Length: 246
Image (cartoon, rainbow, N blue to C red; front, side):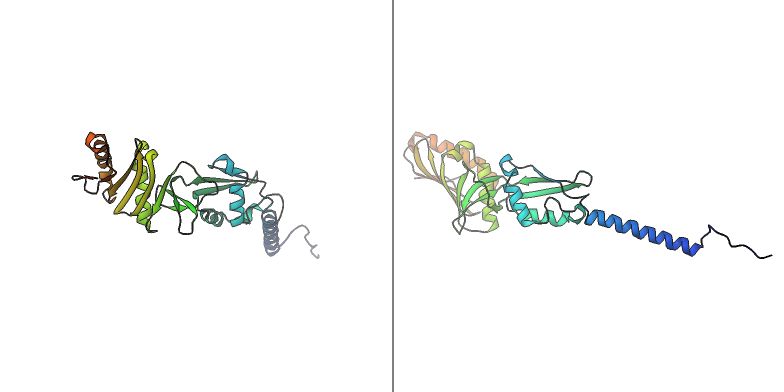
């Protein structure tokens, strides 16, 4: 008697083809959702860690000019976070940043650490720039006031660093009395001040031995307080153990 054909059964090869087809279909669907669909797109970009005045325009404007792909409506999967971080790092007044994305809410969160200026300088092209605590020179979209004005005799890194460190070591009252500061290099720092209503030029000498600065400050205060030095106009502290007044 002839055997009847068996329905409802598939061969192993057919099942394998079906599984591969299903996997490819799912992968294609996921790729479309991630890369082209409007389901997982950037819906919000927020910045934290900066002064409030920057949030609405300055930060967003500068960052999006440098990283144009960081915009609302962009598929989340297309965002190259390392490349975006590198672009943000090229903004001079941003010291560092971190970026994260939330796939479900579509929110991009960028946390910025801005550089804190310790002194203002006039660059060789006549622009006002700033030095941070590490001696890094940068420009700022928003001007700072009340900073020490410094003239650099060299654009070398050690000169900028000496200026920054010197400013940070100065007591507040001496900074307030300072009218100008010339840093020729780490070996020569000269300050013009108005202490107690009288003009005074102070030669601090070399900054290579920064540990001597607090002692030089004390020597300066002692010399100024002496009655016989009431009319001096110059104090040379190059040699801490043998200061000179004129």
